[in-house]
Image (cartoon, rainbow, N blue to C red; front, side, top):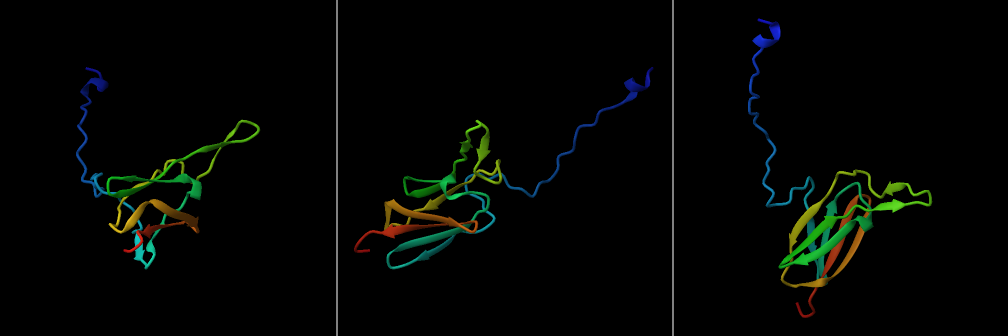
Length: 125
């Protein structure tokens, strides 16, 4: 009997993980800060590694959805340069829309790794 035939393969043991895989809610390290003013709602979120043009906003039912879209820039030498620091860092967040908010009006800014955007209130609210 050769030494190789006496080896036994053990099945890997299941490991307990502290990471949850519940994908129904967005998970972020930093919370979304919301401030209601007389004119609208101000949102701020610390999210490093992007530029302003990477963010996309759209409305589904009663949620505002914030995602990132990575685009490569082409130079004259046809080499690709990316506009982001973390190529595998994709982001998506569903934010419930306030009832008083205008769904199709938003202003966006991204400075110092902080995404800030404003939703405006309907007149008379």
